[in-house]
Image (cartoon, rainbow, N blue to C red):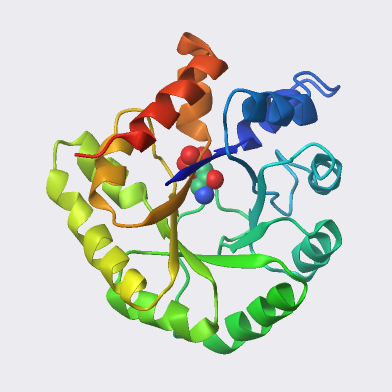
Length: 240
Ligand SMILES: NCC(=O)COP(=O)(O)O
């Protein structure tokens, strides 16, 4: 089974554009779970341009499915995650000024750092995942960090698929096969959408979780949030 975790960053972006509390991020998180989402993801960035650190703390009371916090493990992020104790932390090597996440970890170069930080999270009962490109050496490097899971960075797949190139899935298939052999759990995310999710899911063996935000919110403007979540759940059940 592949769980759908809804990334609610964009709801905070909308709220912050006016100050105030509309839309309410906590209520939105409760509603997506009521509509069937199996997890909620946030990615607080150091400049707090969308999700704020206080949101991460407030959400703890309302996320009763899987709570996934993503981010670069700078000191303030590590303190936040240890304080909130979500179900899962996903480590992403994003620069402070990046518009969005744009690369996976170099798990070989940053092995010592990742080993230390992953150990600390796991000792505190938090499942770990690290964001990686679909490159076999990087998957092997991920295994050596001690992480429970990897999150495959799917931007390249989504881009190729939008151009009609289904072959763009192949590095992901090979990476997933290796991860399965190494007994690493597999998550995936970034630019997944109603257009590409079924093809991705049906080609990736043992895909445990997808986190989807940008496209899901954009699609909801036309189709409605509840309907869109149901559509994702239905596509995630499809087997080719
Ligand atoms: N981990 C990926 C995520 O949470 C959402 O990415 P996107 O759907 O906003 O591109």
